[in-house]
Length: 139
Image (tube, rainbow, N blue to C red; front, side, top):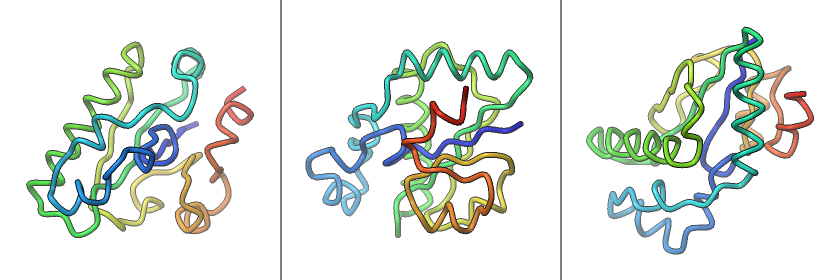
């Protein structure tokens, strides 16, 4: 099985960072670096490592900023990788997919998706869940 995780609004409180929208408009990656975790990271790391040891893949599948330049997308991707290393240092992701805003996630991976965006879950179809279901689904 492949478990896919969105970041912003799913495991990272990106939208809780003060001034996040102004930062995006100024192509500043600070909100991606400064977001607080939305879930218990120790518990998540233990669960991720456990399901990976059982033969499952764990994947990040996340968007960059709406209307950002290609350079900004590259900077966002690096910021998100830094955030993951900081908050989930024991996790070795099978894949980290950071793509332009709006890219259909269902075309990039398969399996289970955890995403706060209802449109992404609907487009994914069966196997797409709200972030609140992470620990319930990954038992």
